[in-house]
Amino acid sequence: QVQLVESGGGLVSAGESLRLSCLVSGNIFSPMSLGWYRQAPGNQREWVASISSSFIRNYAESVKGRFAISRDNAKNTVYLQMDSLKPDDTAVYYCKVMGTTHWGQGTQVTVSS
Image (cartoon, rainbow, N blue to C red; front, top):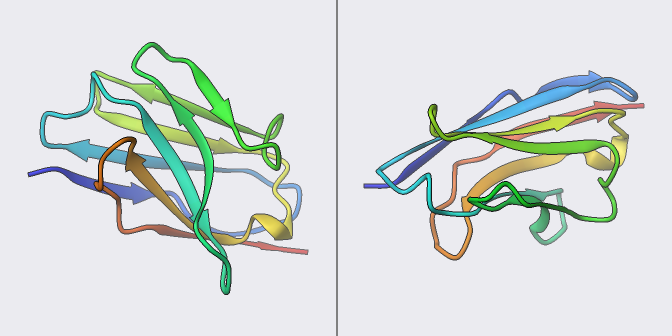
């Protein structure tokens, strides 16, 4: 059974940083692309970043240059380093195994101005 568990969210001030982690269990990690999405109140869930099995990274324009996605295949974990956070980054952040319906439960990120 595939499970994704996010951690690392919290409340920070604008300009500060957070690092999200997502532990993936279920023998699905290494060959798959992984992604981070977010959903702010009243908005649809949107893609933030993804990383392929060959470590090719892609980012939404809104986070490019501020966020960095990485993965550690030995730990079955994908990370999202978020720097220079803005109030507009406030959302619930979810990790996903790309191309599947496997999602985590989400972790709240709140950025105060």
